[in-house]
Amino acid sequence: MFDGTIESFKLFMSSLIASGIVLIGVSFKYILVLIALMIIDTAFGLVKAKKSHKWKSSAARWGFIGKIIELIFVGMLYLLDTTFEITFLEYIGIFYFGACEIASIIENYAKINNNLPDGTTEIAEKIKFSIGTVIIKKLKSIFSNITENNKEDK
Image 1 (spheres, rainbow, N blue to C red):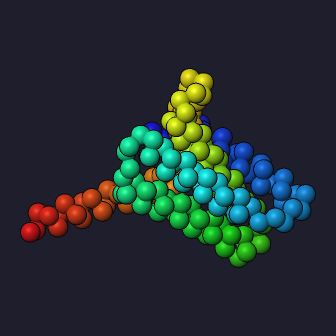
Image 2: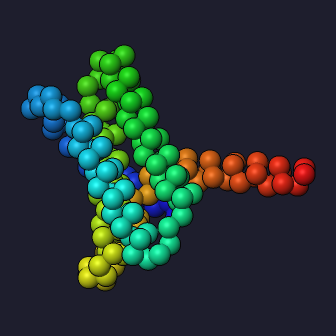
Image 3: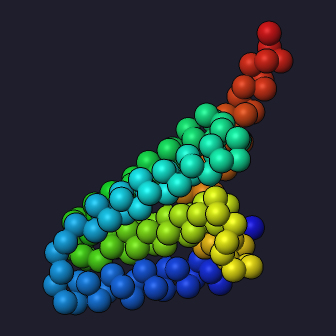
């Protein structure tokens, strides 16, 4: 499901926006915007689950872990910025993951209301894919293998 064109576009746009912010000297903490987007996405996800009667605590848990991973990535980019005096890596991470969160909000909204134009959900699904998604899938695989091995041992 990896689409290199979409990933390249997200990274390019994030780099362009981050460069512009650094260039004009804006010093706002955009991390709060990312956290707000995460909260909105979580709320829409909960509403979607309630409406579809498909509440799964495991899906909510993995979604929360994914958001933590995104914040860890932004934190690591901030440390790189600080260490090497670069000043824009943090913003690239924030805007990259912000784009993923906005796409997820659109996707959840579309599933709640079913009144967005055809193809919107598919586009949003491709955009929301991120490095965090890859890590979550890998972690799920590892944990499912561990639990299956524990069941076999009993």
